[in-house]
Length: 344
Ligand SMILES: Nc1nc2c(ncn2[C@@H]2O[C@H](COP(=O)(O)OP(=O)(O)OP(=O)(O)O)[C@@H](O)[C@H]2O)c(=O)[nH]1
Ligand SMILES: [Mg+2]
Image (cartoon, rainbow, N blue to C red; front, side, top):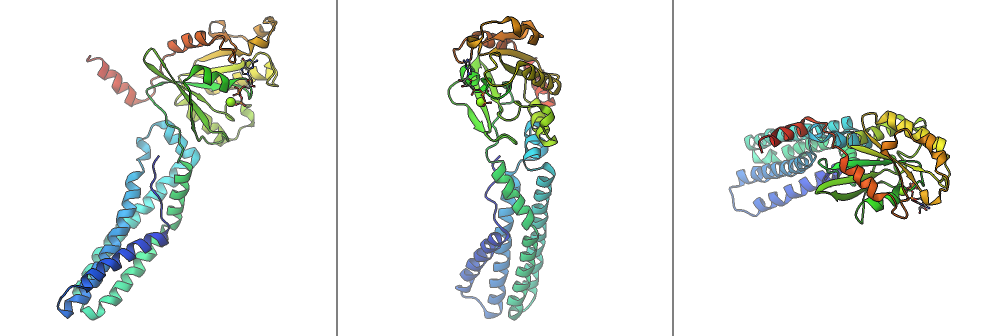
């Protein structure tokens, strides 16, 4: 999300007042009857200051998209990262300031015009005092928007029309190795709440269909019971995206986690993503001599694949499964698009 640079109240006032002064000076250099000049100078000063401040506020308000109009994934993302209510409150405050400054501009412009020129400077000072007080009142809102800007800077770019696969499995089981095998060269690295390394999004084309594969280090690789509510929300946000889960077992257990624990994690993830199909991958088979003992961890033979991510073994089979994944149509917008298809 592109939030523009957010000024401090002082920066906003400085910008407005200095432009006001410049415009006022232009009038000062013009020839004009004395009884008018003082008024004209101060009127221009106040009106210009107000307009400059309003323009900046408006550019911020307009640049931030309506949160309700965003895809639910982004709504969740923003909520977890900075808080949707706080965001709305801050934008509301900027709108409020915009409205008040519009009033002050009219009120003090008229007041300066109605009064004799000798009073103009005093009225202008009054106007500046009130403008400053309004701008200072939105300090915490400007601060918040600056914080939001920093935190939403590197949001993941999601193609909501693509088929989306989310990778899960304990640390070190081979998630990144597999992502590299399944997708083209450089995965996009984006921020994601509660992941120190950010998420990785790999892309691939399968029969002209865009598939994106998401690896979430630090999120879907540890027991759900250890998570707090906000971390859970970060996972639930992925539910808006996933058309399938690739759950990776390290069949060799060289990752340091016993298969029993890996299986437990799988069960927890299946509970959270209850509507989403899972493909079960038994990785590092190059290290495994006896496959027999894996049987007790296989619930769905049809959707289980033995692979060696490092040797590229089993990748074709995964891709065949990927080709069969049906995109889950979740939102009204998508349904409308479906209706359009019928007219072809
Ligand atoms: N022998 C063997 N080693 C593998 C295989 N796949 C991955 N590895 C190794 O396992 C280690 C972990 O692989 P990664 O792909 O980094 O695993 P990860 O799940 O992304 O790990 P984290 O991001 O730390 O959670 C690396 O040393 C890989 O080389 C495999 O099929 N066979
Ligand atoms: Mg990794």
